[in-house]
Length: 237
Length: 237
View 1 (cartoon, rainbow over the protein chains, first blue to last red):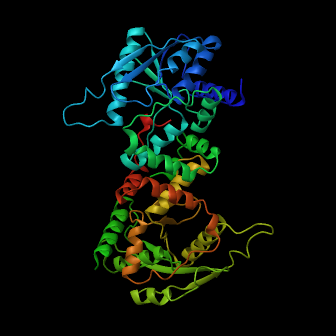
View 2 (spheres, chains in turn purple, green; view 1 turned 90 degrees about the vertical axis):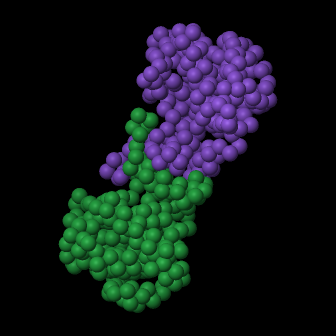
View 3 (tube, rainbow over the protein chains, first blue to last red; view 1 turned 60 degrees about the horizontal axis):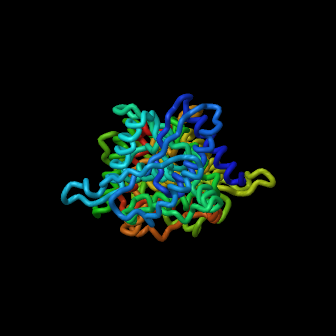
């Protein structure tokens, strides 16, 4: 395996261990958009499912929305199959479900997708849903919530729903986006894009710029990630 | 009073009230560097000391280091006197105190100044030390501590020392730097600079840039400030 491949695999193990993401007997549904993040996660979870000290089952699904989503290239389905996993496609009318007068936005879309993932998990008897969010996503959400919600909060590597019998896991929590980009080049799937056309005004961009300003070295992102679990309460309001 | 003057005065009152910065009978030593921040604080605290519902005494001191510090212009001493407060100057050999081989840095300088402020407070029987840090300083420190210390912490508006009988207060906590700049132009003391020559490589600059990226409107800084006292523990590691 390549150096970057080993590095990412180790970081996924670290996330699984640190946040107790996988328990023996878990049946995990992996949401694959076809982008570099979910493909990196797919590749690694498929490998781990073949010989993980913690035995678990892996399933996959691709949620296809009713709007132009990147290139529309579905070749990743073959790729994932070649790695050893079937990935059925489920068409979801995200846009058609909008109430009259409402415009498309990231919140609506992600909620709709999440609902479908849960329905699918229930159908297949999966207790966990794995998503491809990485460290940069978690840090961006943290800064967005501070700046626009006035709240210290973020996406969790492990998130158990109160109302539903599912747990969301994010095994790429310790993996930085730059590492995923490198990995996707190595495995030659970086050309497959899944970015949608609605996120141009997303508030994610200023958060991304803010992290870039702070972070002159990858270790700064690691430090920021550590801070999320390291409050010094004497020096907070 | 000008609109910006009223606004700043109200925000100082909010800080005093919210963080219980001033109690009846306090004797407060104000550290005046001669920069826009400490002069803004001086003007406002002097005004409040004349007719505050909470009676308190105010004293001032200027700590003069042994290195070129801005323009070296001491005209602010006359200005503060015209507002109604004497501001003695204390010369402190900050640089000369450096151990051989050590180079000047912001941490060393601020520690030395703080020690002198405490000595002076003790001499004059003051129980509180007021500093001119504003909202932007507090937010920058927060982001610096996340990025470079891996810790959720910041400068507090009210900080009681464990080892010393003093409490540090930062009455400008709710005041944004842009407001101070406006005020200093109104009162025509913006030309007095106290920035030193050692902070060019300070890690404060990337933090400042990060806040700029996030903040397309002053309300974003207020939101970030609110977040410091608003953890959503369910969504933190």
